Length: 112
Image (cartoon, rainbow, N blue to C red; front, side):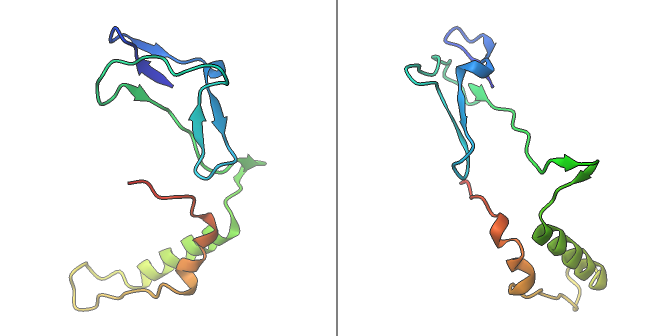
């Protein structure tokens, strides 16, 4: 996590200076108990957080959940089967039912 301090100097917040709530969905960052966030310069990019996400690998293979994997295969196959140019007379709307439902268990949250 990087931020511009009250003197507009870019600083790096150490890993011991914040806690990550990994149980919440979506997760979030909080200062340690008894501490507060440092004062920042007033600017749109005053604080930046670099977040790495995805699924871990086991034996060199990603552990993507089976529902997401199945959705990808079905969706890619449908896109290939109906690969006409966008705007043609053959626009096809795929049903929301089963195929899109494969992703329901993997949705974490939506942000504005």
